[in-house]
Length: 305
Length: 268
Image 1 (cartoon, rainbow over the protein chains, first blue to last red):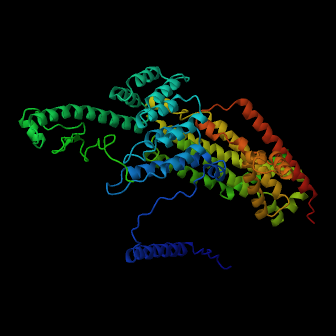
Image 2 (cartoon, chains in turn green, purple; image 1 turned 90 degrees about the vertical axis):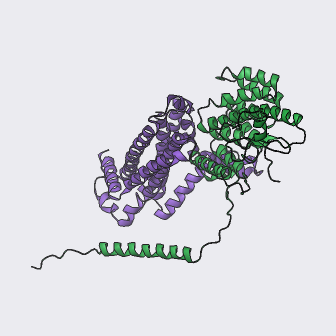
Image 3 (cartoon, rainbow over the protein chains, first blue to last red; image 1 turned 45 degrees about the horizontal axis):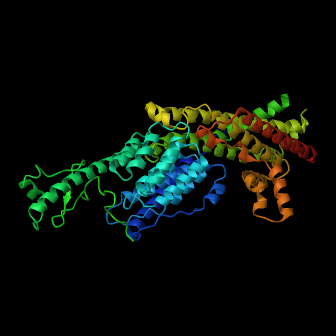
């Protein structure tokens, strides 16, 4: 009887051949990249789907996970623009559409509304400087969850901080304080806002509350604002010394060294990030340096037209 | 009953043999990879996103199994002619169809039990060591038992899809059955648009057809409570019960239809 010969499947050599061919394809691809590099163009970010109503239908019942994808894209877009090198003209054009898509697909996505409230209104270069879009997003959130006091508080914040409309801000804080589970500090905040308007003390009270938030990014943003407010206090005090110097020596350029020599200061003043303040010798104007973590102070930079 | 059970067990074993459960490996890799990666990408939303991703993947993987296994349940047996020896046995055609359906439901159930365990395991590891004040700010706790409500409704959704696939599978080719089943599934997602068709169209006949489709087509939107559960919005027991009743009625209608068609088919 002829012995049975095991059937050869040829799986081993075929697998090796497949791996070699794939390796060669990768090598040719890499070689081409090296030999004919693609032109280094500035690729604008694309957003294929802009209509939230269409997006809601296209994603079928995968709306929550699609909202997460748009949320991550919004963070990536904002982070990439905000951290881009100074020579890059920052463009936050996709921030609102991405947050709008996120909140249409998931109307309860609180963090997306709150993130938009803080950063859409942020002036250039920290944000697009569009408080109107912050308000639109928050109104959408309030329509979805009318009892959420956080949205009403954020709305008051936008009126207060970005639009300097203290009357509307106070009324909005008041409304927020009347919502269920609203914290007790909201009512006094409404009163302080109405009484002190644009005073730095009211701003500080508002940011101190936001600095208590559970969201790390909101806490960081509030800490930065508080440090900026401290810097503005310091600048005000320093400005008085500069004025005293210029009154005593009219027409003489003013520098930190001259102020120290005149015993108006004991050393070069530093901001909370450890960077010396910038002093314009001709005008005597003081601000934070571009290298400072506190740069820019509110109103220090105008958006490119 | 014994015949139904035998067919169901055979379908389950065949699913194991056909490596249907390999999807669980992909699912596990997806969840674990996501849990590692998203922490750096989501500004503190990792627990929410893992819940969303886990529920969406459970639904999507289940849908693929329900459609692509469901459409071959009956037609494959007919094409292979393996249905003839079966009918030589003391088994009614209705038992054959019901057994096939029960077998695929069993496969889906086993699949979903493992997926649910994987979701909870990843959520447990993600929430471990998170301070209580941060956890208090979440819409719902990480190990929220309410997730089971969403998973139960996903299962009912898949049970309806399986019934649709089986219904088409009794008289149509696998390719056409897949097209029809996916068509019904997609149309069932747009029930709200069908209901409010009169807002965009002014033709009474078209509105009547759209209204009829709204009531006749399965309303798959009913089974989607994923958003509510992830955000800690309560889903009442009454809602779950009424949706289960709706699913049961719809499945019964489809199975009766499938049995009727299959019983009348001539296999000579």
